[in-house]
Amino acid sequence: STAVTYTTPFLGALLADNLLGEYMTILLGTLFCYIPGLLLIALTTIPQLLGEEFNHSAIRWGLLGLWPVGTGAVKACVNVFGAKQFHPILQSSLIESYYVNFYMCINIGALTGGILVPIVAQWNVTVAYFIPVCILGLGVLSFALGTTKYVKPKPKHEMNLCSRNALARILGACGCNNWRRDQRARTAASILIQPKQSKSKIGIGTISLVSALVVPFNVAYAQMSTTFIVQGSVMKNYGLVDASMMNNADAISVLAFGYAIGNIFYPELSKRDIKIPTTYKFAIGSAFGAAAVGCAIATEYQIHRVYDQTGEAISVLWQAFPYFLIGIGEIFAVSAAYEFAFAVSPVSMKSLASAANLFMVGGVPNVFCIMLYNACGSWFVNSRGTANIHKLTDYSSAKVVNYFWLLEAVALFGVFVNILPSIKAWVERIEEAALEDIKSPMSTPVIRKNLLKRKQQRMESSGNDEETPLVRAQKHANYLKYGSGPELVKMGSMRAGPSLKKNRPTHPHRPLRVQSPAAQGSNTTYVKVGNVLVPRPNEAPN
Image (cartoon, rainbow, N blue to C red):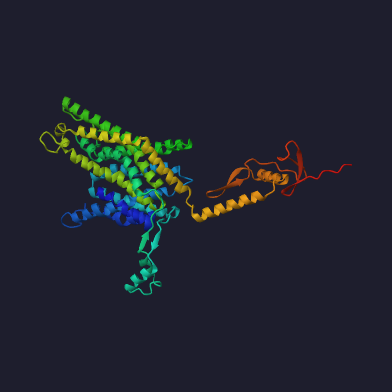
């Protein structure tokens, strides 16, 4: 199901970018795939409801079909839809904090489910499985209630219809001779479309390559559900807290440090016009991942040391340190990967870029970990030659610590690659190219031609003016009147406006003495008549 979950986002992205938009893709994917899949899984927990024997077909459809398809469709679109609520230029500095807060919201659900569902499952398994169904239903309802307040941009991917003659022949063969008058035929004709290629120089392949820079960190992150669980299974429980419950320490870390980083640290840097380079964020996240694996190595040596001395197990709370460090690394690495994919992708491929990023962040590291585990399978074998190491006596004879050292090398490799100046410069060039596309969204040949024509007209008109003292004085008076302060006329348009300082009004009959630029050292007196300054006539001698 994990492989399907990280593959299906491409399907949801294609629907969102080309046909439905993010809003409708989220809504329909949740209503027709996500909730039905969870509901089908929950119904299998009720004895004899779907048959006298356990219904394997229903669990396969729910677990491997509906649920991962719905999850994938939502994963590709929900972060993009949230980011599109911000103005791409005026509020671009808020996108960084948004993705940190978005990742925090994900972990709120993970923390609630990780604590509530296991506790309820000890009382009633069916009720525990119906909790996600009800919570997701309430989430969809609240999402739909805010429909009128959302920014819901239409898909930007332009489509070219096939030629009229070809459509006429195709629809005529289907018996639709009067297809122009038939609405159904027009709907069918809209299916025969050919997408235009994006004009942006930044493609999905480039975004995938940059997202691959966080693969080393995500290899360490993937150990939370595999090797960390194996290690924690031979450790002593702390009350109700066992190895599986320790996963919630990661969500607690993301919530605590995510709030501090996203709402305090990043905004303070933004006020000082400081932005951490994307590759440095990846490097910081990989460094925290390496530190987490280092703590797991220390825990591994502590397990063996205490067992050799006393034969006892150590507390599972030792794993709190790796989980907390992994959570901090997620804030820097994973949220930065989400932000980068959204910021640099073309307008017509935002969801597709998100799907590619999800595949590199979740799919590729999982495949790599499976291959790595199979290659190092001999380290997970006890003294009897079996892979059953869930008891401390068997675990003590295995060489799991060698696997952790290999993971440490992978995480440190991620740090090294992301601090390379060449990698940093490459990613910055991509971001600058994307920024130029955003700053000039209306740059077309016609607009450039009209701007050049108006510029030439202004130059010709200014060249024909006779530079006389009266003209210069009038220009100076207009400058004093309008000032140099900017005034926002419309979005993205600035012109000279009135000065912020309130000028003292000039008496209409009082002479205005102006220093003439043409005659340095001589003063010329002008009289203001309406909005025009005219030279004051010299008084005739008596």
